[in-house]
Length: 228
Image 1 (spheres, rainbow, N blue to C red):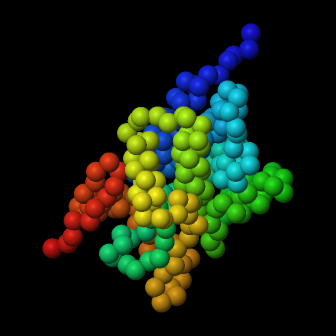
Image 2: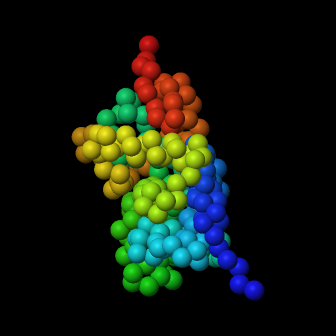
């Protein structure tokens, strides 16, 4: 007897994705991103089986699928989460403050098993540096795609994490900001980005401690308290 995948099954996985995504944004645990990748893969699988449109035309999803498959079926991806210094500390130009760095040789190994479409998807959705590849822009943009998808297909959920994500989207709409990001960052005065990745990034623990000290948070939106 074939198993029927329902709308409720899809909603449960959507809830799970945003829960894991928000947890990852706070977590120093390298395994946190594994949960996000696995949930993204599962979302597509359930949506497809329930008769909803799939994400196979998304570069971000194809990259996530490849990284997830490697992490689960092949070998460790050896990822580490790092953060840029807070805005007032350094005049760094960036649209994301978090990086999820995977060694470049690991990403090369993942790409070896991909077809041309998969390789292009990886290159277009991730940010490549000298020694690392940042997959967080890929994850972030997939989260945006999924949120917009839930609106279009009447699959909204009412969890705290989903509402926080929605608040960010609404803020961008009100201020005419783009939802998707390019990733990467630029240092003032043309500084060496690759050297900064090695020596200048913060751990997630340090980032979170500074956020609590210097920012107030309400419904997922942070407001700068100022410094003494």
